[in-house]
Amino acid sequence: MSVLIIRPESTPGHYRWRRYDRRAGWLAASQKGSLQTLCKQHPGAQVWLMLDGPQLVMRRLPYRPEERKHLSRLIPFELESDIAGDIQSLHIAIDAVEPETVTLAYVDREWFAEQIEALESAGLEVSRCFVTGQLIDGDKDDWKILVTDGADDGWLPTQLSGLGLSVDVSMLPLVAERVQREAVAGAIPALHVFASSQSEADDIVSMLPESIRGEARTRVSIVNEPWDALTFERPGAIELRQGLFAAPVRWQKLWRPARIPVIAAAAALLIFLLSSFIELQINNADYRRIQQQVEQVYRTAVPQGVLVDAEQQLRSQLAQLRGSGASASVLPLLDQIAPVLLQHGDVRVHRVNFLAARQELQLALTAQSNSQLLAFSEALGNAGLSAQARNISQAGSRQQANLLVSGVAP
Image 1 (cartoon, rainbow, N blue to C red):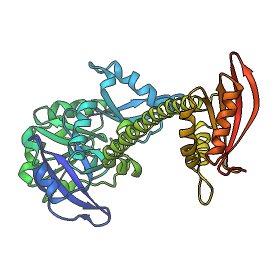
Image 2: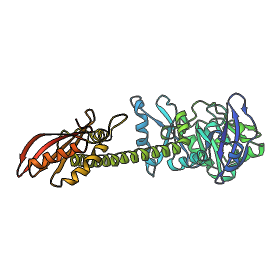
Image 3: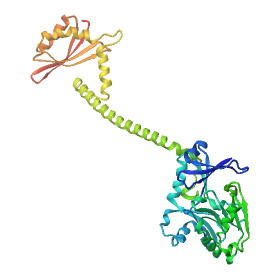
């Protein structure tokens, strides 16, 4: 599988890129241009990012064997005394730990995040990130200098004593002297310069101190492109995408473009459930209010008796009053009773109950005297109805009775 190697140019928002395959090596010549041009040519490409410049610093730190398990926590304290700024503002990447020595790189956290975000926000997938100087090919112990077409910004990717450094061209002599002093016994290593021409390499070598230039074995490799001097198979090259900046795993890659629609859908679902819950509470309150009204109506029509389901009981009584199918209805009975009742103004009806099974109408009546109740019963008989007075008794100053009325006189 091929990947796209990218290195930022000195002009903000511009890059140099080149396609690379682990088996076949470089697949084409490098190109450079704006980020828009890059994304247009390679939309959604997997990217390995190379970084260099003064923001990136590499160090070697010694440690004791008993500290090996806690290096990730101890390193910030070791660096704090040498760094003027806030140690919390740095991203620290650690190489594979060697016996008694650890190689690390640190970079400003915000600057590093900006480099990655600029590419990922454009749809590219930054899976790995390296220090350019560490990728220069050649013998492990050689001092290597890569003269790139980016040297016009004043910085040279180098690898001195195994550390990838970006060196200001004007500071190259001082840096070389310091690295030499810090080397074991001040040893003069072999010098390997990669350049596009011999004269270009000679210009760089001439800048080195005489103590190094005169004693070091110097080798020059002429490359068609500066990137031909790079290898991505070098063991020990620090992967900057680690810790908080580790490349996202597969589910995170899928989640990133989908998170806004998913969050929006979840918010919509939450709003729907909340509104449904509120509506349910309102409907329950309305239902209880209607039930109370139905019960009040039932008690108005039926003051006495057991109340279980007011609505169902009212429906049952209404069905009895209306009748159904071949059964008689209460309405014809009431049509016959009403004119007789109007003629007997002293008789009052307090309750009416129709028994559909027996086709009888029960009337709870009161009058001033028993004779008035009996006269009303006799009048119903004369109207063609069957009327039987029962349970005649006195209720205060009035007489009361239950009258059973059916449609056919006996």
